[in-house]
Length: 345
Image (cartoon, rainbow, N blue to C red; front, side, top):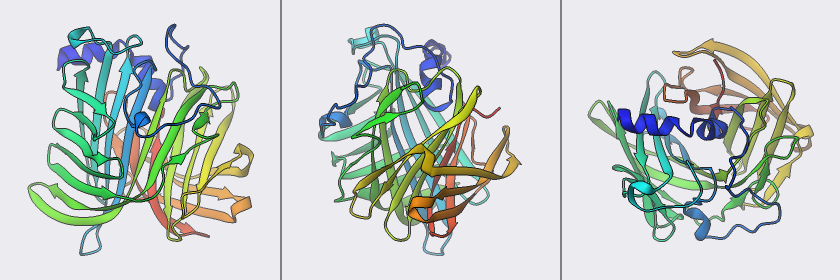
């Protein structure tokens, strides 16, 4: 583990750009996203080793038969020391996995690392499989998969299914992350129906709910002055969805972006000027103070909502720490979802 942790530190800036909010220059030789490129499925479900960073990011909002609510997270990150795949220990690919299970009063977190090229972690497009050690998302394709993970005190096995289309974020999957034009390729599947089992301290409980998968890859998604993001994925009771984020900038105003997704999967990109995020409350977590209550407004959609967490202390005490947990939504629209906040100290 110490060796793997040391290897992972080599591309620290690459991982940090992706979800901890630390920008850096693009390393020579890596591919960069281009506007107008077409996402191709199932090919793009697999890894893109010529890009510097990439992730498969699943969040789930769940309820048990007694009405108690839970959240689950399963994430596989890939970071590259150099472009290309390579064979065996010569592979330049580094993998990191995060799994979490959240209740109203407990937050379980697990983290694991792997080196590419030796079969310990990887992704195949069809049949679909993403894995690191014994954690996996696998199925015939990404419309029907089983998700498994475990850590100290918790485990889950979740079956996901959907017939909905994948949703391209931004301009046909080209997602701009700053006024200077840094961008990533980004698409989602926010329409999974979920059934499964969670386990806490050896006690198993059946759950049902909704899940959201994000897929993203790039080589320089953030500007050097951007120091973190606040990202929302929301399932509204109407069947509509919202993805929205702000990237904080230590030299000026934050950068906003989002997508309003109709119940039939039709995406409507949101201009940054139409999005408003207001912090309502900060709390001291087991890490830093973070803003766990928010007001989100989109005037053109008649949206004026307040989001609050299931568990305010959903702090991910991982190599690159961040806050990630389930939220509930009230106001002009009711719903549930997830909030991720990075770069807080």
